[in-house]
Length: 97
Image (cartoon, rainbow, N blue to C red; front, top):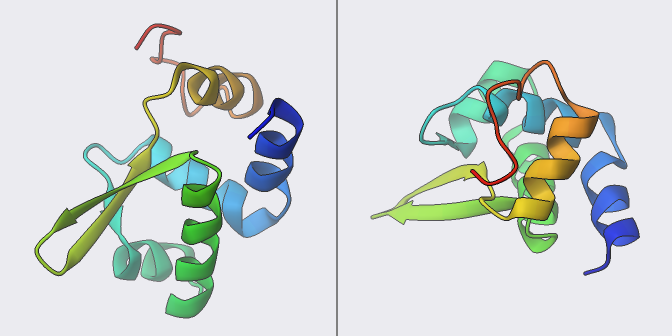
């Protein structure tokens, strides 16, 4: 996926931005139910937007049995984009982290 597609996919709607902000402060990731409850959105909306962010390789999914945890990708280019566009939530991130 190229840079333009990555940016459009990540920041094309408000729910995705809210998810990214939430996950930027969640150590170890969060499951869909907790994300939906915290953001006061439906499970299906959370799932659909998480899948879009995962497809864009902005999020990673970790499976622990039946539970799926989502966390920000460790890819350098994703961290650079997120630090530029959501800086106050990601102050502690370094480019090489």
